[in-house]
Length: 270
Length: 360
Ligand SMILES: Nc1ncnc2c1ncn2[C@@H]1O[C@H](COP(=O)(O)OP(=O)(O)OP(=O)(O)O)[C@@H](O)[C@H]1O
Ligand SMILES: [Mg+2]
Image 1: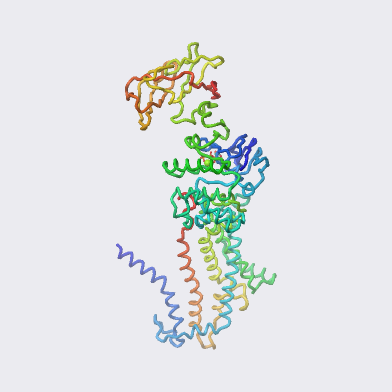
Image 2: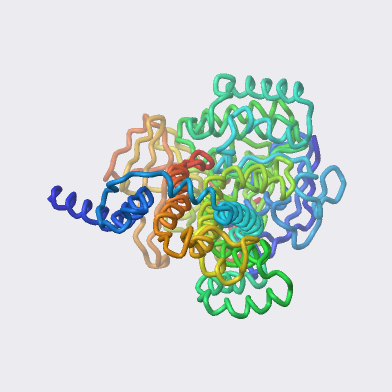
């Protein structure tokens, strides 16, 4: 029984990892052996990696990705935290509508927005700029942050805010000194999810940019060409793909450890 | 130190529930007042209105003669101990206790001194660097108390602070709260649904039911002179026996026989209330008596509870149970016909509809 499950596990992991292994392998292959079909490179080389970092467009794309991703995440977290706290704690007119709308946005097919956004951003001069990407990223990251954060806030006992108020805290101090520290694991998790969303986006990045001014790394990769007409960019594309995957792997490892932290134990009775 | 006045205070929730109805109460400076009543009677709501955690729908709340209805909790200078303790899990015991002082921007050395003082008072010095998660229930309770008393507030509010503790610890903490309050002399409002806590802790008890204050008074006074049937049944354990009675010339006809009480101006029917501890076994024979068969005896160590059941008779249609609280040495035993004596002058009479005590 155990053996059978173990076998299934191995199969699933292999199924999921083979494409990843393949691209890692490709990224280390010398251009002359790139089409040899071997799983392990016969001629190892770092030249693909060296090449992409010598390529200004790619390094610029990485900078854009990091910058746009961080700013969009920060804005989404700022508003998401406040909205989520309100949803978790207050009753206010329009609360259901707010929840409904954010769910709607989360479900909305993004492709249907690309053309209108393209037109709007060109008219407003936002096309091919950082804000031009930050805006749609915030829009689509917000429902995600609102949802996950309000679930985290609901976990925190209301008595803690009441206690803070009695201890002399203003509503903001109660939020900032009591609720936020307790919600930190949830906020880190949410921020990572939001950042990964921005980092992984290809659709907006390719449609709303036209130069390396705002083009993010995934979009930049699609513009890779060989050094000459006859040179195949496969190795470089593979190396770049590996490079942009690394942060995700790092984040996921972090995120796993974070989510376990049961910070709220001991607050009430327990 | 402060005097707290509730002047016609009411609470109506948005959904239409009237949780507290027209409460008039003056809590004197240094007084220890207990709010007691069954679950859902509005005790917590009343306390929360004093605290400022719940808006007052009607009436006025004054602290030291100043209207505070509109003041935020932090501007009322009142500390509160919650039933769940509500300790901040991300802070150590020291930080928890220092929190109100930190918010008030008290100088650091002063904070340290005050926390140390409170910790000594509550025997918490060894635990100052622990986090709430690593404390026992009783220790958490004391930290919650400590957080309330570090800043020397005008008044303490406590909402069932002992109800999460086991029975032994509860008794222990009860006495230490009582001692602490006497020592500090801080005006205290304490909510409980436990009538033993109510009887033993406070200077005065406020008994509430369905959002209405039923009676306010010293514990002994309430026990001796309950204003109505609800109060009589709520205070005292086991609860007072209630017997439907018909008023006749020779006294009150009840299932336990005729109670020789004659009073002018009684309605045709009343409810007679006899405390279980009023009954004496046959060794002391004076006053009135009744005879019945003991169903069950519960031995409590220091005393015995004897239960009698009276079958419905010709004039009383309900089966009635009577409980007597007797000395542990009483020779009665289950199944025996037993005669118990009581002082008819100490029997309370209640109006059958309004429940008002007619003998008060
Ligand atoms: N936010 C609210 N909205 C509507 N009704 C409420 C609200 N809070 C409390 N109530 C109602 O008000 C009444 C009094 O509640 P309260 O919490 O004061 O009772 P309590 O005496 O403290 O009871 P317990 O001993 O169970 O704590 C209850 O009937 C309760 O259902
Ligand atoms: Mg309550």
